[in-house]
Image (cartoon, rainbow, N blue to C red; front, side, top):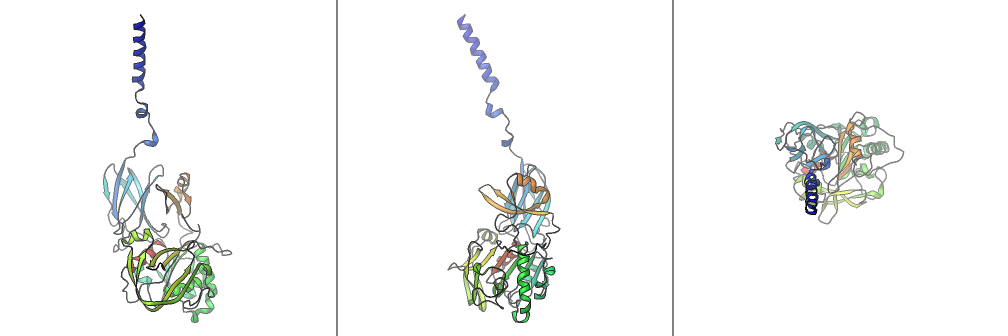
Length: 391
């Protein structure tokens, strides 16, 4: 009888175990459910289809607002893993506020969709202006990519209403002409400060550092009168000599976008502005010479007190907002997304504004080199194309 009792208990126990099975394998865990994905491939190109764009952000979101992200290589090629379904694919440079494209694509499970080159051209959203110079023409590079820029003058720089309609202003070397326009420069200094503090971006080359830090047509001493960048942040002296300068690309993103990290820069003028002192917490060095002297710097840390709150460029009409998202590996990216997505992304940990710098500041780029009037600039052309697309 006792044996029968033990047998019955053993059967009940065995039945109980068999009914439970392996709990970890049968209990559904929504967080571990595999997401069905496909791939999107393509080649990011400039608006006129002549130049591959390296370093462009390519991304989309799933229905839970998780980001799927990649970047284009130096030849513009990308391969993006994306969730199955109909999605908007975003292509952007910089933080996406000035150059971006949106594509609608149907992603199928375990299939690769090759996007047509006509779909992956990078569109110009920004309104761009330039001041004509003597020693270079950045407008030629802008136009060579298929984008447009409007010529303005020093008189226009003295008018805040005029410049506030633009997102980006390029200051060509030799455009300052201080002796002709010196009465305008207090207003120009104030307007450029207001422009950048409200999100506008500026690129200046060589002698036109004087727009940033003061001085006449160029600068021959630290802390000259005028300008809008604090004197302690930058000093540039007009003492560089002509010749070929070996250089390295010190910014990883720029090097990846270019496909090289060393180059020779031809300083073909008899004298050029040499950066002799800078605040490394304020400026990021993107290109330097072999002695670690900066040749190309940028900042988005500019702030100013007492400047008017002035809408700049497309800001009053845009439906996009810049956010900072942290990717796996603690990699942070600044991108622009439709405003309707912002609350959902913030709920997942994104923050409004760029990942670094002042939340309101535009970028200031400065290069001691420029595109020569002769057009013989070699690999520096790729760097200046990068500057244009990432302001």
